[in-house]
Image 1 (cartoon, one colour):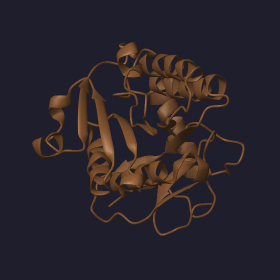
Image 2 (cartoon, helix red, strand yellow):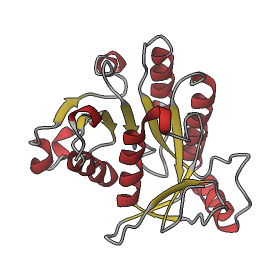
Image 3 (tube, helix red, strand yellow):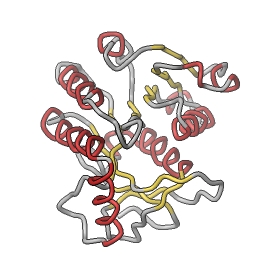
Image 4 (cartoon, one colour):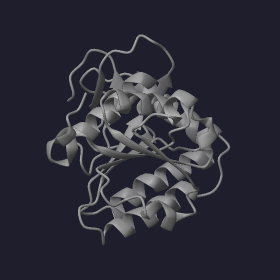
Length: 234
């Protein structure tokens, strides 16, 4: 449990999905304050929705001014948003991130943005991985519009996020399960990286990164690949 001085003010996007609810619960367990900004907040279970540390705001990504009003005093924005299906069309997410990053360029003490992406985004420090390459090709062929939007999101952070504290973390396969171990971050093909990561491990990494803060994070302005298992960050 965080002390009063260690409590973080977190905005959570994607907080009504399985990974988001696990992140929300873990943040509460650690004593943090969470604002959930969601289109359908009724999906949040009653035990979480009634928690004393939660603030729920109903809104869409198009209502940017409504979202911007929540930013003062925020330490971290955790976004677990992604294309809703393989047939996802449109640029709703990348357009939102453009508006958010441009707004934060003029904001004193901008929060650290932790935003979800996938390993289809390659980084210079990645090593070759046959399994990763196969997954990327499958996504490219079968979910090309979602693939395109994810690449656009990465490009937006690199272009519009200059000088801002952001981390566009990449995942491969998020699995359900109770056998969560340690959450790790590194590069594809290195340091024990693997395709599988439990959603509980993702929640653990996001909350842990929020607790570390910008000053102690090694991933500001970077796109680490997350993975599960008992390995150290590399």
